[in-house]
Amino acid sequence: MIEKVLIANRGEIALRIHRACKEMGIATVAVHSEADRDAMAVRLADESVCIGPASSTESYLKKSSILAAAEITGADAIHPGYGFLSENAQFAEMVEAHDLIFIGPTAEHIRTMGDKIAAKQAMIDTGVPVVPGSEGGVSSVSEAKKIARKIGYPVLVKAASGGGGRGMKVAETEKALEMAIQTAKTEAKAAFGDDTVYLEKYLGQPRHIEIQIIADTHGNVCHLWERDCSLQRRHQKVFEEAPSPALNQAQREEIGTIVAKAVKKLGYRGAGTMEFLYEDGKFYFIEMNTRLQVEHPVTEMITGIDLVREQIRVADGKRLSFSQEDVLLVGHAIECRINAEHPETFVPSPGTITDFHAPGGPDVRLDSAAYAGYRIPPHYDSLIGKLIVHGRNRNECVMRLRRALDEMVIGGVNTTLPLHRRLVEATDVIDGTYNIHWLEGFLGLD
Ligand code: ADP
Image (cartoon, rainbow, N blue to C red; front, side):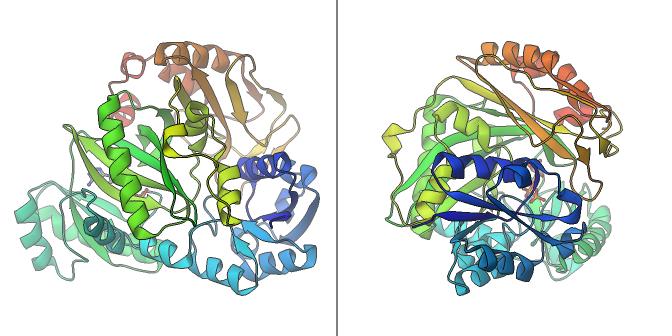
């Protein structure tokens, strides 16, 4: 029985996990670096432990310090959030070796899905459609050229261990392929310590549509519909919505069922997301994330299901609190990621928040650990909050988002709020007619 959870993360997600625990009557332990002493989750948690200096390699990524903190405080379980150690199979193993519960999938599933080549193969085996490409890693340029000729240019060179859009290079022609492979390999080696790359057909105008799933250890798997995350900059999501304006109910039921069946076949437990590119009515699997996603609130808003609560329940061996028929899809939800960055140059803007006013009113949710007087440390990513709104339909949702963005004030640092205010006025965003390249065009980056 989980009675105390250690939250191995920081920022808004640490607070999000704390909130779910409190609503379940579970005690919380916040771990933090020296730079995060004044963090909201640290203030609110029942206990807190400083696990090291500001550098994340010496704190949030330091497995031994986190395990020691769990032991000292007598926590029963560790929630890794997203990023940091959330998709580190070795950490999941270490947690279980210390007789603690890892709130996430098994180390084996994390390992398989963390290797994009193995993940693609697992999907092919379970009947999920994938992007055409090389069957495994490409070992030589001549082999790559052969495969590229077969699938047709342009092709995308991707890192097997990739993440965050790194180690990804497009080659328009055979001549450019050699260079693309070299650059992708160098980038992948530096970022992930693994220079294995593979080839994929580069899709021209796709949307990014992902399916949220959750599974318990009793063989129950549910999908929670899709999220459309096509508004991206440098392959990073900026604005997400659910349901996707590109799908009808029959299409979403079909892909949801395919995904839930595949997940059941894999024997997966916990929350996860299967990411697809969607073009001309067809889905192509790109990767599976074995953790909670940043954009999970849009799913919570349309289904009324608390995903963190369910993650904790299934980690504790309980059954999902609902079945597929209970997973409703009500209205529409949109999330804006608010980063402490310049809204045009995207240069990070750490510093002290001097003014902070959260929007309110019906169906407005703000997931943020920021407050007036909070000093954003320069050591971590620049996400300072997520504004999520719900409406009975997409139009109501967009109108509500506009007024919520107008109400919101963050002073003292640059933020991407002005970008979101521009986005909700753009015709293609209002109409929902955008693809993964649209935002870079809008920003004048293509
Ligand atoms: P990462 O793990 O680095 O985020 P993903 O495989 O999830 O990489 O892809 C991130 C984004 O890159 C996708 O949302 C999409 O915008 C783009 N992308 C990935 N694969 C392809 C492809 N085959 N064709 C076109 N764009 C792609």
